[in-house]
Length: 264
Image (cartoon, rainbow, N blue to C red; front, side, top):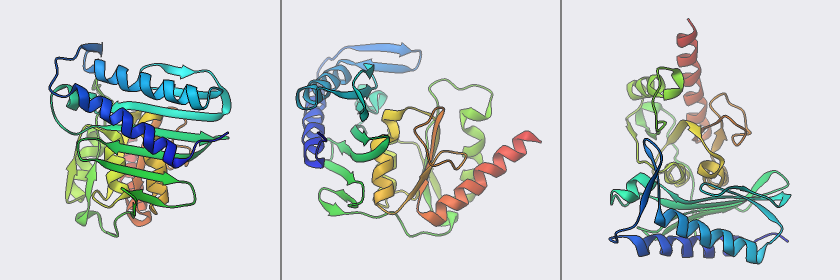
């Protein structure tokens, strides 16, 4: 049995309410690495999501940020990020989301990115388009990078390699109107889907970061690939580029140009 989009919207909404119940409280924080945190809120929201899925779909596999890969029937795969933007949340910055994606037989089928601070729910079902709070959304129509506001992010620990994203950032900053770094990959991707942002790229991602949002962009008329242009953006090592078709092609040219210069 497969879930419905309405079901995923419902559990994402409830997980968002759990996150909001911790706002202003003295919740616990732990370091997963030097610059990466997990909070009591992450754990509570993820526990709720896993319990809800296990109750409704006990044989499904789940890949969750804090709990890892939970066994189940491979043709039913969930991707859960209960709190995308943990550092923002921990510092009281209201930029974070709940991201829930579902894949059937290896293809992303349903995706929801919910922003509880603005009560904005970005949703998509394969073949049925993308919505924001029930209204259809589409990627932007810009065709020149100079008119585009892009978004990106950086790995928690920067190294002296191309993968630290700084070389790409420098080049896109020269060519675009502006670049934002909001601290929530899922929200960045959702903003591309509704045209608030014109494009997004990032290296060093995880499946739960991109699964739901990427489907929403595709259903909103955008193109989604990894940084090498491959359509399987969930295959490790995970990277992502998304935009409308014209800007996506121009972003790919920039990325390849940076890589070529780095090889010389």
